[in-house]
Image (cartoon, rainbow, N blue to C red; front, side, top):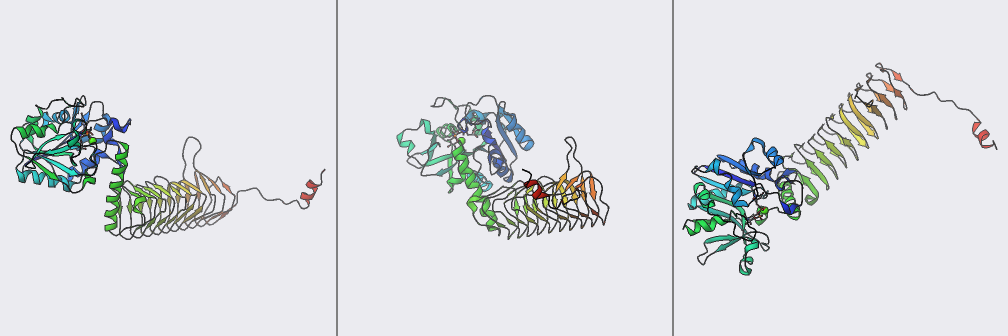
Length: 457
Ligand code: UD1
Ligand code: CA
């Protein structure tokens, strides 16, 4: 096998996106487009990868970091000019170079590998990855001669009537003999409708030198979608979502409505998980077997244990145990650790708090900066008063404690093991273990007083 290199073209601003964000950083299923491209190329195990980024595109360079070598294209003079920027790094190398666009996020490593293999088997100097589509608008068209050999690629804006009717398109991905690529790039001109140096012109240049040009047609046009505007971005999102969801379904996950279920590319889901419509699971989340998510739940970077049920709720950066019941309408904020068989009910917010196994916070409570033991019952409307405007303080509630409804626990404070806090208490001092704490005004009844008030006039 020849040495293999990649050039990723990612310097275009992406005018048609009408965005402050560089095009290749627009996310598809939560991950920047260019990252999808890099991830798939990484799987193909290449010898070197070079990404071409635009001048001033710190954000792109920052995102890519040391995943690839970076070269800067000072001015965006076209894809041919962009590829040329990799010359200093690759010029003298023997082997095959794949050139890919940073805006084709759906192409898989299998397709890249198949293209490499085809190119090397055919002994071609250039091989274009092509696809056919009923609506080729916007893409470069692949022009073949009578012998059906590829002659050149013509861009949409430079094509005549007949050429526009061709429905075999250039996907923007090619393999080249590395040295032949840089040799031919020197002869690319910008004499065309857009005044740009077109990479696809390399094909015609090599063909005229009687070099072997090949085309490798993929059956799946959808995979080669190039994202130039927000309409294509939504299409890419849709395709990627479908691909991810189908992968999970094949692995034994039930997704009731895959069109309305959004699962990020890094999420792991075990078999027999049930996902209801309108759910979004993102980041490095792990959903363990037989959990039930949704309808309408959002989970970001969480571990959700076996058989846990989470309805209409939001959870971020937290650890949720087994057989937990969450929601409807709960908010689990970062650094929460919810123990097994716990319950976090409606309109409960938990933040940076450990809730022990079997503990229940069933309704309308805020538990922040807290350590709650096992089998604790927290009554409706309980607040851990954790913030004095400057600093956050810890509330500790020990095992088996019972907090009556509508209590304020003014941190720092501890409620000892097995103690009761009476409903409506405002607790400012530590509650020793095995005690009852009542911290509210005593009730006085003035009998007959109501009618006295009524009869005053
Ligand atoms: C390009 C191809 C077209 C093909 C289509 C497939 C050319 C001239 N045309 O068109 O034949 O059908 O892709 O999706 O190549 N870029 C740079 N520097 C530049 C210009 C672009 O790095 O100066 C990068 C962009 O960031 C992008 C990629 O090259 O990732 C493609 O550029 P784009 O402008 O999107 O080309 P298309 O018009 O889509
Ligand atoms: Ca494009």
